Length: 126
Image (cartoon, rainbow, N blue to C red):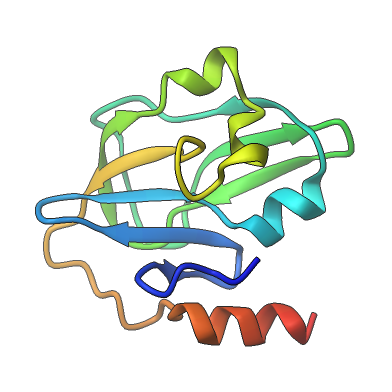
């Protein structure tokens, strides 16, 4: 599946989607495919703040446990509560209903993030 062109990506396979006053963070289709069936998602609390690259939670699949890394410096303003009962949403709709957190990111630097084409190229070289 090609990556959404209006999203930004990290080399740790998290995506970031900018909205007017906040951003949304999730894991990529490549990541969810590599992980396999996701059975649990551990997310931070609303109000928690993180630096770019800092671990903000974990995703557990039937194969492994993987850390989640914040794409940019940001403060959590909402978590996807639906994942508590349906973590498989990350597998079935990672760019939609399977989002992880909404963040307030102020004037955080987005220059280290890749666009969709660059991320797709990065994944094809793995």
